[in-house]
Image 1 (cartoon, rainbow, N blue to C red):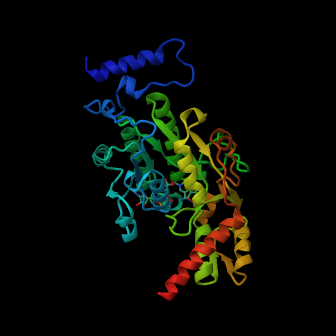
Image 2 (cartoon, rainbow, N blue to C red):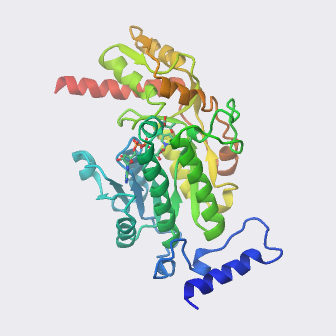
Image 3 (cartoon, rainbow, N blue to C red):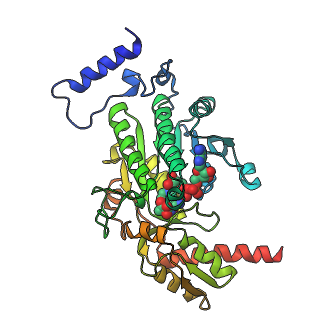
Amino acid sequence: MSFIRAASKVAQQVLLAPGCSCEPLYVSARCISFSPRQVTSDASFHSVSFSETDHPKVLITGGLGQLGVGLAKLLRKQFGNNNVILSDIRKPPNDVFHSGPFIYSDILDYKNLREIVVNNRITWLVHYSALLSAVGEANVTLARDVNITGLHNILDIAVEHGLRLFVPSTIGAFGPTSPRNPTPDLCIQRPRTIYGVSKVHAELMGEYYHHRYGLDFRCLRYPGIISADSQPGGGTTDYAVQIFHDAIKTGKFVCNLKPDTRLPMMFIDDCLRATLEVMEAPAEMLSMRTYNINAMSFTPEELAQEVQKQLPDLEVSYEIDPVRQAIADSWPMNFEDSNARKDWGWKHEYDLAELVQMMLNFIGSDSRVAHVN
Ligand SMILES: NC(=O)C1=CN([C@@H]2O[C@H](COP(=O)(O)OP(=O)(O)OC[C@H]3O[C@@H](n4cnc5c(N)ncnc54)[C@H](O)[C@@H]3O)[C@@H](O)[C@H]2O)C=CC1
Ligand SMILES: CC(=O)[C@H](N)C(=O)O
């Protein structure tokens, strides 16, 4: 009998044994050493184990989007420059390329992923590659490939090599039949976008691999993220970034959502800190593997009024994009994140007024520098 078949038999016996239905249904990949992809080598035997005091070696996929570069900066400060590798399928700008390790990685190429993980002795994987909500609706097939097939590669690699895996989910993992004000961690999830469907799939697959193979899967459902020095990649919440750039550059902003569309939002520094905190949290503090996190909720009208306190001449008009509006109308209005606060001490720092101040300071000083040059 082959090793894998023997191992599967052991697993079946463990799973089917009477009295074994107690939570969690945990079958360690290291103990039984078969992987979902059933690679010819027993790869999980060879995974490098690090002592608690060692820094993790981190790979970030899809790292050139809105969030990856900022996360790399934060993690490099914590773990050292060479311990955090950014990867993407796009060419990095000069400053990113020269700021630390960058590598080409297409998450649809399983062998390439495995080579990177092995050659660089990766221990933590932050999986940021995705097509976001609006872009996903414009290209469902590609979104399905990247967000679902790509995720399968990531999960299998993570199990095979004993990695700690972070996959972000989103407010978009909820739908019109979810309670929307507020939306708790556990409730009905029937999203109406390929993005949302793929993220529910990611949550469930990650949790399943955790229980089935012992994968150290960690997931936060992010609200819309607002950043000053990186551009959003085609989502429904993008308006809340664009308003700052347009307010400073032209003094006029055309919003593609209705003025009273309320959505949960967060400043990027809070989002990245939450990601580091949940990755560092001792496993025993995590009563769940997928958590909502929140900071604030506002409408375009409320955001515009807050910006107008600093830039009173800003003119805001509305030209509704029906695709984005329909998506926003199906998403949470307020996000309930008490489990994250209770379990691992999540606490946001930025509210609406502070967010607006930070954004205007950063983009304003940036555009003044551009004018001088
Ligand atoms: N930015 C936000 O407001 C929120 C983001 N998230 C999640 O956080 C993660 C990161 O988000 P963003 O940085 O905003 O996304 P983004 O759209 O700005 O960047 C995604 C990156 O994935 C890369 N990518 C696409 N196909 C790929 C492939 N085949 N292989 C490798 N990389 C590929 C793209 O080149 C891009 O750089 C995503 O999973 C997203 O769903 C969740 C909620 C809110
Ligand atoms: C909230 C998200 O997941 C993203 N910003 C989007 O709008 O698609």
